[in-house]
Image 1 (cartoon, one colour):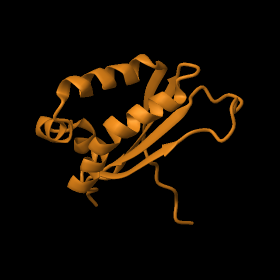
Image 2 (cartoon, one colour):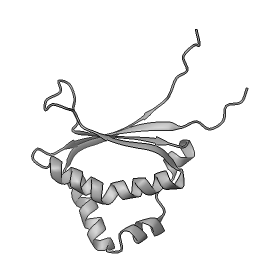
Image 3 (cartoon, rainbow, N blue to C red):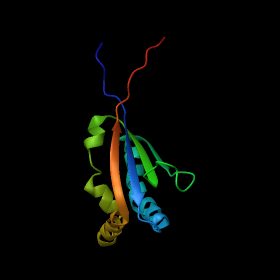
Image 4 (cartoon, rainbow, N blue to C red):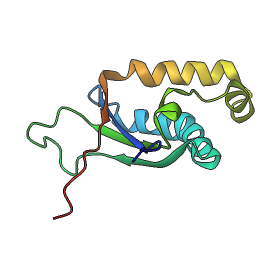
Length: 123
């Protein structure tokens, strides 16, 4: 039996510099979330979730923010948001680029974890 394209989930972990958590979240919500929402509307993304640990100092947690994105398939993972969407959503491209640069300047670390879903036996 041939298996068709399957959804792919990727977890994006961010560790934000101390004291800049709220600023980073504000920039993410203002500049990156609308692009992700466009991906959902276009069907390229199936789900996007934003999370943070409930308590400060969650043991071994080495991250402050987790963004989990479920893509339609691997081809969707490799696609980028079309430039025309970025220009439509952010007519002031200079401000957009500066704010995105600032968002990444606030990070101490960032890593992506593509998950490979494994099948479990029915019984």
